[in-house]
Length: 237
Image 1: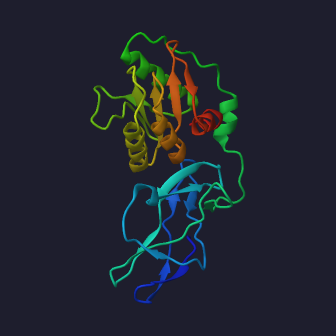
Image 2 (image 1 turned 90 degrees about the vertical axis):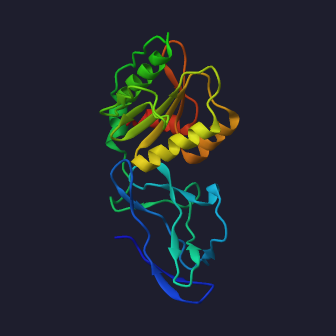
Image 3 (image 1 turned 30 degrees about the vertical axis):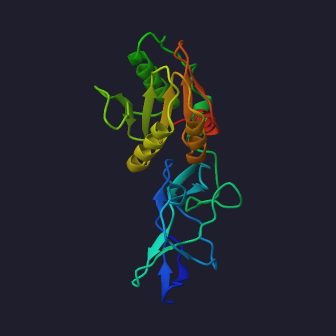
């Protein structure tokens, strides 16, 4: 059960008991944001993208994800943002699974056979190669969209969504953010594959959101280009 903390509204001085939402990590462990006891809450006066999310780490598998920042609505009309200790320093998500242990996927990744790529000749080959790679990583039930969907998601599985950019232009910031939102809505890992790499702002956003980025070469072999992608290769799907 999530740990509750006392909260006092600075606008009307009402006292509340706040219980954070518990989220399911991709590894299956329940996680909750590490609230800062005793820290002053702050009313939300305006909305900004970077303020809406908090990076947290699952203590069971070490995976970092972005979750909605905890908020509490007071009857006086104020919306209060609850202080959270973010991952990256001393912050971490607490998991009821107990002490951290290497996830089974990490051991499975070490036993994977050599990936056999598909030579890239057409845009469809890029999507096919990405699907094969996700299956090689361990994601089950990965299927391709029959046509390019409006969401931009080319591949889906129970635990993964992926976008594949086969164009000769670097993938954009908007594409990375849309993929991340699709993954968040589906409670799935969002993975991006691009033939021409990524715009600098897209790469920076992916790093901050924890989105794995891969570049496909014409041999069909995906190469990780950021830390989340390196972690995914290590741990598997």
